[in-house]
Amino acid sequence: HEDSLLQNDKLSLFGQLAAGIVHDIRNPLTSLKGFIQLMKSEKKYNSEYLRIMETEMEQIDAISKELMIFAKPTEPQFTSCILQSILYSCLRLLEGQFFQKRIKVETDLEKEPIYIVCDEQRLRQVLINLMKNAIEAMDKPGKITMKVTRGTKEGIFEITDEGSGIPEELIGKLGQPFFTTKNNGNGLGLMMCYKIIEEHAGRIEVESKEGEGTTFRVYLPLAKKEKANPST
Ligand code: ADP
Ligand code: MG
Image (cartoon, rainbow, N blue to C red; front, top):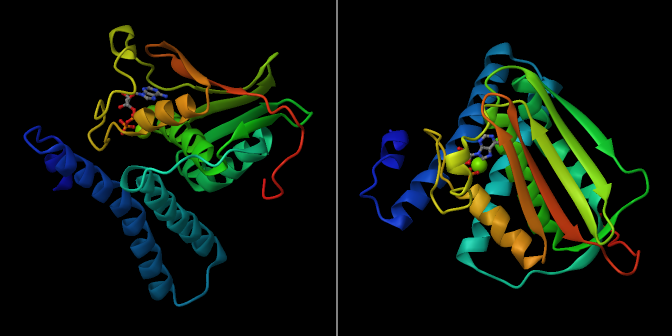
């Protein structure tokens, strides 16, 4: 019933936000519960189930971190990071979802590490949101392509899906809070992406063709010194 809550435009902003969060958390919880029941009925240890369960838990963890941006706005912590490593860590997190929707991920990454200045946690949230949108836009198996390239002053991350595409008249609405075309969306993902990339003095470009797919391109300033944070 939280879906009907989401469509109720009389709900306060806070109410809409809360309903969206409840929805985002219940999905992985339902899946976790399902796998626990499966293991109970099969009465044996299944490492594949456990691996998926771990991904679902990480999903809930990621949502709770995302929310902290609203609950406790803090200054971003900028360090020098390798763009390709951040991309890989996000891919790992969503592995289960690509697999479930039978989406092939193709990567085309610049071989030399590209050092950018960023708040690693927040940049990960941006990439994860763009990846989730790409997955959600595809209603049949297909391919998502991710590219990392070096511009003269910027590192560039590009994600292209073969999904529904975005009608031209809606492009201007992207990033507006609560703008969503999904029954179970909250319309906060892109708003957060734009906010975070703005904080990074970067920019986001969108190209889309209805019925063919969409490309989101994120530009991030290169770091002056090529010294990475060891955690990346
Ligand atoms: P949500 O995913 O909760 O709907 P977002 O802010 O992430 O909110 O996205 C807002 C809207 O932008 C989506 O509902 C969808 O209409 C559109 N959109 C974003 N990314 C894509 C994409 N890759 N393909 C098609 N439409 C997209
Ligand atoms: Mg989204």
